[in-house]
Length: 303
Image (tube, rainbow, N blue to C red; front, side):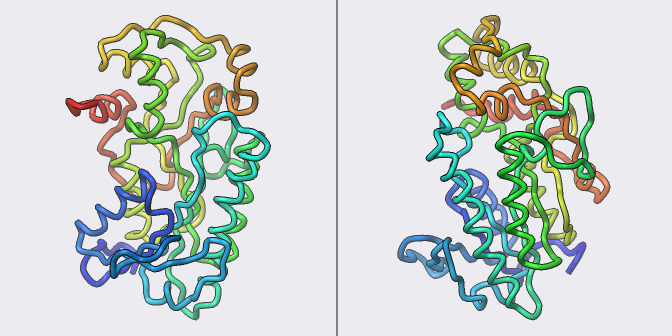
């Protein structure tokens, strides 16, 4: 099935469909004519929904015959603070559902491709270096979480794509807290502001997931915009689109004092990540720069 466009006759199973990326992915798949099976935790409300328990077990028959199974489960990384209890929730909500899907896939004779979410946090901070999929795991809470997340997916067998997603530039994604600061007139550099932030538009994130399925890609795949962006680049682009100032800095020590490890992993992280696998497989971006993604994301009059 490699290098075959998604379309009528293809079925894709999606877990974690209620999130920002999941909703957009399902809309795109349906737009192509593909059939989507959603795994839900409640009583099914439509014929395309199947109830499941993320803690397992899952009947392999639910996945049998699909072209791909996409796992996007996970509590929000952006919810702060990361208390000990919430750190456990961040880990459980990713590793447990992924392991349930992997165990069901492993029991099939001809399993579909497992497109398993991971995150750019796998690499930690690597100041001054361009990072691709060949780089080893970094240091930090998110790096450890991603390593366990990917290990859970590997229980499925050989056909696993570890999709290292970047923060999505969207009003309901990474832009949300930055937009609040901008509207209050208190936006400015976080730390030095020069740190490289991985990013991707929602359109390109969804297109990349479809591309991975269509090209039957396996192994780690960085889903990240092709051009480097600093925190200043993204923050200033938001302020400019909202016609607000951008000059009030937030020192790194204050962020660390207020947020602890979350400051290092989310706001002060310095990771210049390259989408080498996507590039080599012919993927084409709609948004090559973070500024373009911000402009498009904030183009709606009700922003």
